[in-house]
Length: 168
Image: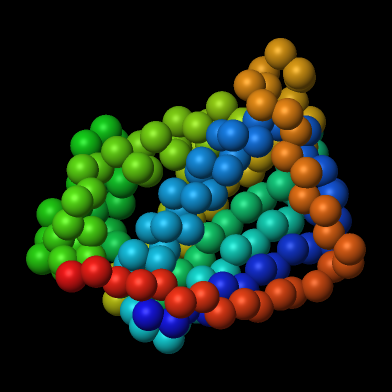
């Protein structure tokens, strides 16, 4: 399954985010893994980052993961961030047979601790965008890990192709 991975990082995004790197990595890994699972062959996943003001008027980075996957029906959106809120459908069972409905619930809790809760925009049959904001500077006592360092040399959009081996 060849999927294009595109990075879109705005010029205002700082090189370092002084927040909990472990939580940030876990949220990103989960969102990207879900995008890969639910995206068709030869599609594109876009990971975006832009500078925004958080609800508390602190500088934050808005992070988004956009896929061209199966999308989510409007009536199912309310289940996404609930504990054991697994979407039961034939398509979901085929693409994510071992899912138990905890990944997005955990990711939402982690995202809330480092910034804002997860948000989703989706059109069934067209794909989804999951996003959240992470505070650029959090007090050191709120971090369980050293700051996340993102060393960019310039503001460019990067594309890379990845091969994802599928089982089953």
